[in-house]
Image (cartoon, rainbow, N blue to C red; front, side, top):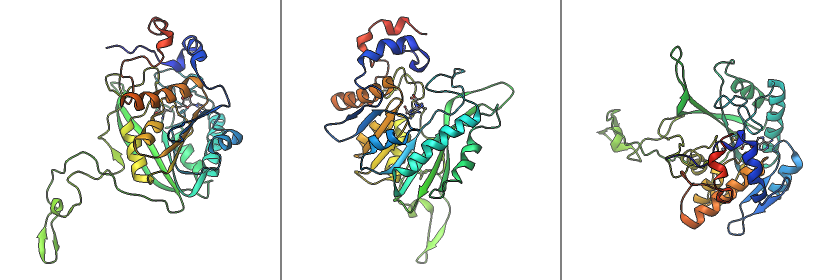
Length: 321
Ligand SMILES: C[S@@+](CC[C@H](N)C(=O)[O-])C[C@H]1O[C@@H](n2cnc3c(N)ncnc32)[C@H](O)[C@@H]1O
């Protein structure tokens, strides 16, 4: 099996071929006629762009996955860029301000992040410190996912981390969503009403409760149904569904300023939330809308090794940029 589309963010020729088939141009917004989701081609740093897509909505949950300022797959691109840290932090401060301004008083902000071990773990500490300037937000959790596609060396620990910061404003809703990992360890005896019980007897679920280290979620790769060819930075649906189910109620407004493959959109559709999402690049906004349409038509969450842009035919596979 081979992916029909190479990494789109590093292939300007291919993006130019796809552009005529994108229904949205810069500044435009698609409103989903069925469930009211919104997808735009907008800039997360511009307050007027965020205001346009949010309208009167205020997000109950923001799940943002910005470029990490790290070369992914040894390539920095216009979409997944690497800037001087000052410029990157200016970009970050702007979108965080917009997330703050357009979310409700009781809400969560989740930030997906990387930490470059070759560069003082930047930008993780800078962003943690920046968040202290936002008085409305309180730190809530510092989650790490196991990302087994990590980059390695024979002389260092293989880097298999994906960071996820959770902040909250006010006192938002939270509920525990259990993992699929069966509880196997007995023990932790405790007397309840005079009877000695062990932990499995006392617990509310047969499976483990997730902590802040998530090792049970498979990173997306080309053999999975949810794979979106061309989207190099795709997050897993399971991780975003876990965030949505634990940190928002049904019908809540979930915002994502960095749509890319549209994972938050699909997760919101599956969990009966309303998603407001955008990307600066029309190609990724189109990919997100097509992924939703495909999901509704076929029940499939991605294309696995299919081509989301069949219009460009064989141009996709022969031009790997
Ligand atoms: C790391 S990816 C997001 C991945 C996404 N969570 C997923 O599962 O597919 C970052 C995205 O941010 C977009 N982006 C970069 N700068 C942006 C900006 N100023 N405003 C909005 N989107 C931007 C890029 O085009 C890229 O698609």
